[in-house]
Image (cartoon, rainbow, N blue to C red; front, top):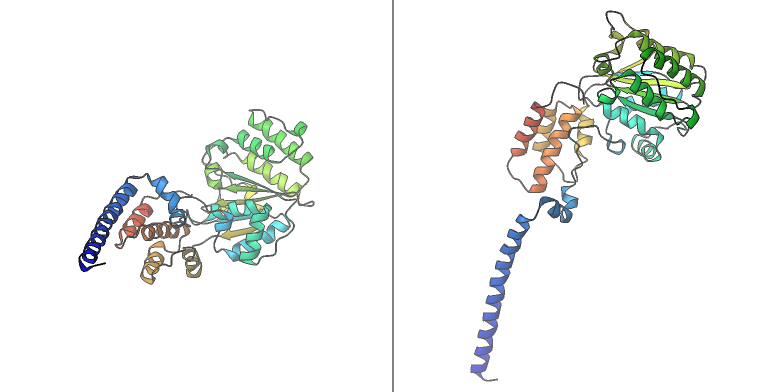
Length: 331
């Protein structure tokens, strides 16, 4: 190959490399533009791992995401062993519902393994236990007869023993008591969430609560029926039309649920697959006041910002805005 042929070959290769480089840049820009135009759900399929936010802002957490409260959980489980009545109270959004939903799932193998491995708490044999959860903020349970019917339906009685309760509240209450007395064999824990909401609606009559008290005390010997309730105030101070009900005197163990400790808050933040900067962690601790819901919101927004590659602190404004919009009621 002479010098002219070599120069021609080098020039040709240079031109090819230039063209390929041009199309590479063009293709990169085109692909980026197309990527931006794709719907968010489609893009999420390719970035699912980075988009999975471990923080839950707005509702209770599930058993395998439950953090902290080891002393409270151990105390409640100790009472469940002998089917005792427990009252848990604390301000709104402090984590009462999450605690109660975790207790509800104690009968599942998955939750039992999580509690044993995470909290090192020895659990009793819960296969024969039955947990029934009721949230009185659910509009379906703001009627006495519907509430009683729900309990009966959840008891897994023989089909012939399941009856439709009459609309008359006195008759339905009497029949409900008869059904439980005659059919309740296994240990049953009824979880009453946001009980003050019941008192704001159709459950202000003392007869209803006194009937529940009578059921509980009559089944003490065989440990068949227990109640665990949550409220924003100490239930022993509840009044009904000016008179207190003796139902709330059966709760020998009254637990006040407070904010997380700083160690528990840090444990929650450690759920993030992406490590938080010290300055961000400090901001979260300061503005959350160690309250679980506030922590979840702040961590959620920070993690989203990290996944999006944001370098400014707009996540702080978003989180604080969400916190400011939270209504003054329990979640």
